[in-house]
Length: 634
Image (spheres, rainbow, N blue to C red):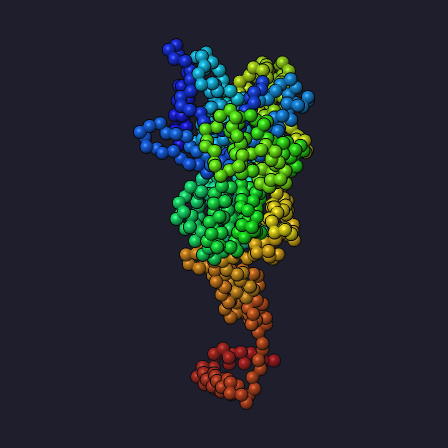
């Protein structure tokens, strides 16, 4: 795969390479929607504003048209607005980057790796369709990039971005594979690695005594690498996996139904889902159609911190879900900023138009005729007086600032690195002879030096810095989906996991948890019940160690611990009690001369005495006579 990336990068360089015969120009069309604003220093951003795509006809007889992005995604649009909000805050801050204005180029990837790559390569080239050959010598049009959401997307763009040493800060890519500094030298992130998330989930499973669980993973880098880390963690804790299935949203319905059939017919109902948000939405919707319920979901940060379906559906299929997610915070001023978004602020911008139309179910009139789409005749025309305060969706849900906050931190991390660059004193800089560079004339690789040592405190008091792998301090909230008084679902904090703590990493309030089906008691997830005292565990041939039979100890043997793997023999003078969990003294029995056994033993004894007498008559020197003679001597 990396060879393909290299080919793409080399092609991009070849296109941009100046020569005397041809002016530098872009090959092909650039048709990604986005937002932009000029500034002294430009930042790039990639977000997935759509989650369904209609692919063009690939007949190979003519130039293929662009992929058509469908189904507007409100939550990532909020992420992008959080980046713009942070940039405006920074530009208005007289203490941070004074005299420097940040600008931005933000593009829509439609949740597709190939479109993320297209956007990333656009950052490496001049935005104009045709420029003079001299401009082809310029560096990228952005100094740093806030991207991407999915791990697969980040794995796609990190190699070419890293080749140019452009700082890239992800807000939602968690794959532990991205911590490889040799492969991804310019990659940073403000969300913890899945290495820590996997450990947190494993400890959660162990804490509640679940030893027989199912697993579902998305068939992509996020799910495959994440589940691998989770399985390695639970093996050390003695937990077994009843089944493991994988799928992704692009699978056929037949494959999806096969996955659901496995879940439905499993002997365990406790299931860990290491699945991306869009794929999890597809899975839950189909499970509702198939009338599957009673699942106790254990979720990852990608989906457990947001309601994937309408409240009624969420309550039916995922009420009681528990999992780990990014910590929830309040960003002062962001809600007011979001509520003021209006098409008039971004004249002619197709992305904002699609957002507004998706929110209110109307059509924004295009006075400048820049929108090639046909107006749907059944939709009314937007008046411009619509109010976001009256809308309830993922954009207006301001109670769950989790990933939104990681976008906010990523933007500020870049700003603080730029500020440190601007504050450099000659003789104390990180470059040869202690030299510094000007914030008005620098290369991205020079900013990368400052990114590695950035260390600041956010407005809400959180300290932000990166370790040697570009990862942040790993902390998570433990959340639980609970039905509220009006029948909706609330995502409630019930605990905390701090990966930086030694010893007490995990704390949880069990009494605050509501389980699947509204139960207050912890659901069971075991292949075999524990073997009580007096029995031993016997493994079942061909099955995991969590599946076993309990066999009672034999007479004269005991086990006095739960789940004992063997029974212990009692001493010679002792025997096992009826429950086989304790050794007790043997009873001493006295025989009567008049009992049958007594008569038999006396008879045998007399015969033995007579036999000895006869022996002495034949040989008076045998031992008994000798002893007798010795005993009667004075």
